[in-house]
Every structure is written in structure tokens, then in C-alpha cells.
Length: 430
Ligand code: UD1
Image (tube, rainbow, N blue to C red; front, side, top):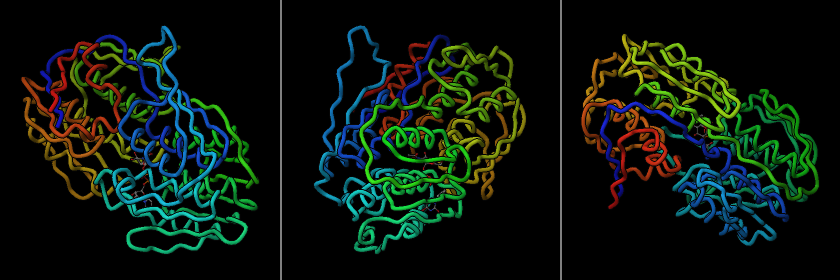
């Protein structure tokens, strides 16, 4: 199993190109199931989760083509891919594929809408809480589906003639349930209203793709989304938005090490709450035409409290990275995680660097220490793994991060991007 080895202490300076967003690319790929015409996605990141979803979609009968890089185009440019679901040959998404990544469960919406039936294994993914699927079941039932759980599978059937528009009031903001119900409703008869919908930028990206495919959707970017069903969707070409979590992660890395880095392609409005907090802890954030510049001089970091909330709040996917940053701050910081109940598994690993963190229910209290020391650590989930890299970049001596397959699920060429900016970091194979 690959590991990452790094020696802390170097500043980061230069430019880091931000890749396409994993959390937008995945539902966009799934949207291809809604039409028999090709869907072209540009700026798709090269990630293990994308590869895994390709296998799942191919199993349903989707033809997938990756277009070659054009001459002179850099490696940092994302892939252009075509997804063509001319015929859906299988409406079952099997356990061995779905159990590896939670987002693959979302195929249930488009399959049910287009084929009027779906049999999808209960999901797996990062172990960051119980992550049930009750909102999906409730939402699809509101569109007229009948649903049973059979041997670990969710078996969904639409009424004769297909799904029927309805009112879906989500009990709690859910990104996945919003994507799935929105996609399913595009082909339902009549109007669907999703109340308490997610407002994450990835929802906008998917809604804009569906609209380009002929869907009638309004209210995107608010808590109420309305979808008027249409009979058929057609092909489209759409860009995957830049990854705001990758952006925030590198911004925190620079805040941690000091230096001056342009995060090219990044969009500040997608992570303003996190950038505001970074400004308050001591980084200088500047919006430039082609990205966001993050700088920190040699001065210390200020401790600050942060509450994790759905967008536009501080993202849960940056909580672990922010905690790593606060381990070196001057003073005591409190972090309240309100989205997932078990997203503090990185705490024990950060302690191996000498960090002082106490967890009480939803709240982590981080008391800054003057120096972290390099350590052997274990990646526990996707975002937690990268928090260990951030800690290692500032720690004295050598750090080895084990089990980095988690990192490869969501970060494209991480060690390459960091080493080009001056970090001493390498991947050790095997
Ligand atoms: C997505 C993101 C993930 C991010 C999360 C929250 C992708 C591929 N993944 O995950 O990176 O951390 O949003 O921003 O985009 N819940 C239920 N029942 C349900 C569905 C959700 O109780 O049926 C709960 C979850 O356990 C959690 C909360 O709702 O407590 C929000 O989860 P949700 O927004 O659905 O997360 P995902 O869509 O899985």
C-alpha cells in the first residue's frame, strides 16, 4: 500500500492549479443516466472515485470515452469525458461496487425516473457517521415510488407511467438527497418542490447541467427548488466547477507553512466562509482574476472558533484540515461539527504529532502548541488524511502517512502539486 513521506518546515510558494470538483463530477456523471444522448463533461478530475463510478455506470450500460489531451495542453487541465447511456442494460447497482463509495447510491434517482425501476445496494463510503438513506427513500416515495429493502438492496418501483411530482420537505439539509430527488423529478409528471434543499455550489453545477439537458428547474441556490417534469432530456456539454475543498485545503496548507501561493482557477464565492476565517487567523487572502492568492508572513496564527454548517457555512469537508491548522495557533479554538456525528477520527492521529485536542460530543477544543513533531500516522477517511499532510508540512522532522488510498479518492496529484511549491514530499510505492 502506498504511503506519503514528508519532511516538514518548508514554506509553500508558487502556483497550484485547482482541479475539477469531485463532488460535482460524480453527480454530473450520474446525470448521464437520464438521457439516451451523450453528455460531455469538461474538467473532470483524475481520481479513484471517478474511476469507480465509471465502472458502476458501465455496468448500467453507459459508454464512456475519455478525450485525449490537446497538444500543448497541460497535465493540470482536467479530462473531457463523454457519457452515453443510449440503453440502460441493467437497473441493479451491485453491492461490490456501491459499498465502496456512498455517492454511487445516487444512481437510484435517474434509474427510477428513466427506467421506472432500480435496485441499488445500500451504500458504503467514508466511515464518518451512520449516514442513512432515509431521506432518499422518503423523497422518492413522495414522487410516487414504492420502496422495499431486500437483502441489503433498496428496491424502488415507479407507478405505472412513471414518477409523479410531489412535495419533498427534507428534515435536514442533505446534498445527496437534493441531487437525487432533483434528478428524479426532471422526468416526473408534474411539479416537484424540494424544501430545505442543499445550496452547495455542486447543486448549482448539476442543476445547470440538467437545465442544459432540457430540464425545467428554478430556485437553485435557495432552500426551495422547484422542478417541472419534462418528457425527455437531451445531451449537453458542461464544465465541472473548480474543487472548493481542494482550494480550502491548499489555502490552509499555506496558512500553516507560510509563503505565497496562487490557487489558480479557484472561486472565492464557493468557500467564502472558510476564507473569512483564514483571514481572521492571520492569512492574507486576495481575489485575483485567475484565482485566489493566499499569503502568510512569518507571524503566528490566531486561534478562532468555527462552527461547521451546510453551505454557505464552513464546510464539514474542511473541518479536519482546519483542526490541523489550529493545533499550531496561539490560544484555544473550539470547533463544532453539526453535520456528521463521528467526524473526529483524525483527532487521535493529530495527537501523534503532539497536538492537544479534546472532544466532547460535537465540540473539539484545540489548544495550540508551539511545535508539532513528525510522526507515523494512518489516514482514516478522505478529508482526515489530508489534515495529516497539513500537520506534517509544519511538523519538525519526518512524517509518514499510511493508507493513502483515501487521499487518491479525492485529491489529484497532491504530492506533485505541493512539491512544486517547495514542500519536501514524496509517494512511496508498495
Ligand atoms: C456530501 C458530500 C460530502 C460532504 C457532505 C456534507 C459528495 C459526493 N459528498 O455527502 O463530501 O461531507 O455532502 O456536505 O458530494 N442524512 C440522513 N439521511 C439521509 C441522508 C443524509 O440522516 O438519507 C444525514 C447524514 O447522515 C448527515 C447529513 O444528513 O448527517 C448531511 O449528509 P449529506 O449532505 O446527505 O451528505 P452526502 O450527500 O452523503
